[in-house]
Length: 467
Image 1 (cartoon, rainbow, N blue to C red):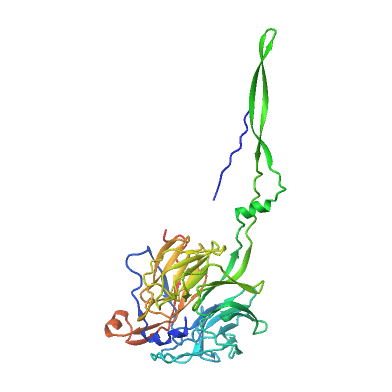
Image 2: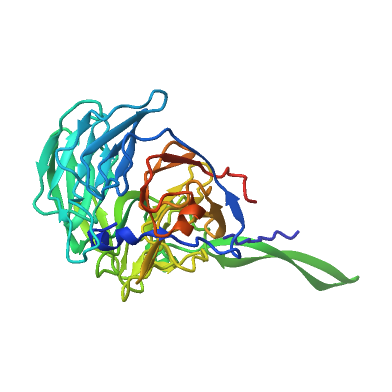
């Protein structure tokens, strides 16, 4: 009898004010590139006031658009509100201060928090700067008036993040400021290891790294005795002399082999909600904010160079994807991507074939299949800023598709991109400067400043599309 054992192994910033009037449509993506998926879209009825560099979010059944620059290139205090059935309401409420390039966050009770930004008028004069705002406002979109909150410093190029407990974390300057809706005030602050401006940031349900094999062996302990198992029995045959000749004697001798007891299955990975901050002006560092411990931690590894205006998204596989931005050493956008892992690793991501790069783009994770869509953003060069003419879809972490926007929606930049619902993305307003009669005829727009007064709604590709 033989018993055997077998084993198997398994595995946007104020510094751009001087160049806004020269913004034009770029060439978009080249003819050769990833497979193309056309985006279906429709435009909502005209807004009461066309704007760009505004902020927007859904507040229940309402789309709320605040501030932005108008066709006169002036910041506006207008609050524009649209119901999905009844359409746009007349502008009946305003912010306390005209502002653009601010953040906007919808609170759990339907109120809206806007923070920072700039005020004033854009100009081609490079010596003229917009005024940064050191204030925030809380208001209800259907009720006139707002509560103004003074800040310790102006905030531009900051980010705001709604936490599960209803608070809002605002990242900018040297702090993470926590806004408490119940108090209608910033009640707490966590000091950052590095000042941040024009950074990327994302809330991340961070998987704690699994222990390494060496750690697992060390945790086993010196007192653990090895297990023994019978893996084979051997037949031993002996010839025994007798008076009549020889007889055969047979015995079974067990072979005892030392084996290690099978390792217990790994425990499920714990998760912690953190805020991951990537880059910023003069910064190549990655910083992690732990709200439970009220502290931050710099990652040992850094990006290849300082990075501003990148986009980041927490993906379904537990990693964070960082795309584009402007790298140090120039004003040119990059098309590079990086994967950030829970173990603190920073590795090159998929090649999106963005020859001119993308800065200030928006990323959206599809809840159905975990794919990531890149939309909006600009190509940056020293002498020009051009709106991207399309987008990218990353499926399965590596498969890349080009997203083709309709020509009626593509020519505009400086739009506010938001999630309209589970399957649709909305682009609010936008800007384009038309310099010549030839360009005006080709684009179907008048010469000069063009500010879009529409919201374009795009349907994300279906989970089975593009295969």
